[in-house]
Structure formats: structure tokens, C-alpha cells
Amino acid sequence: GFGLTWIDMSSHYARNQRYMNQLSGATDYNDPAYQPVAGHSLNGELYYRFRPVSWLELQPGLQYWHRPGGVAQTQDAWVVEWKTVVTF
Image (tube, rainbow, N blue to C red):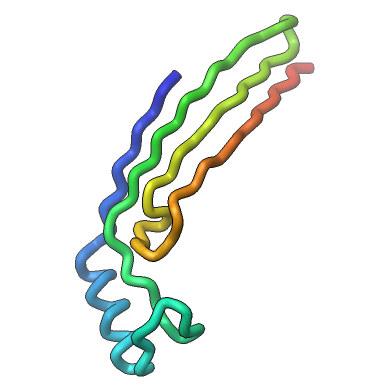
């Protein structure tokens, strides 16, 4: 299967984050007091599910995250996943 997700954060939330940064005087992403200002994020997922025996399902997958958490300063990320379902 294939999935694609677009996440767009609230402009009210972003405004609040900027305000919190202004109050704390934090202007740099590396400052512990800095509140990251979220924007948008994109996630794509590719997976395959198969059942080798009637009681076992295996599902490997791969995800790609562009701007994880909607924060421009974060690096894009790859996620490898593995789901297992055992039916008793």
C-alpha cells in the first residue's frame, strides 16, 4: 500500500510560538528556551502486508518525513517499520 499525508499546523499555534519566543528572548533554534514555530509537514509511506501462515501477518514498511513536526529546522527523516500480528 501507499499513503501520503500533508500536515499544516494552525496559524494561531505558530503565532503563539512566536509570542513565547518573544517573551523569553529566544531567537535561535539551538536555544533551549526556543519554541519551534511549526508550519507544514509531508509524510509518505510505502508498505506491504503478507500472511505466510494463517495465524501470522508481517508488514514491512518505509516512511519518509519532510520537515518532521512541521519545523523547518529539523532534518528530513527516513523511518523503517516492521509490524507483526499473531492471531491465537
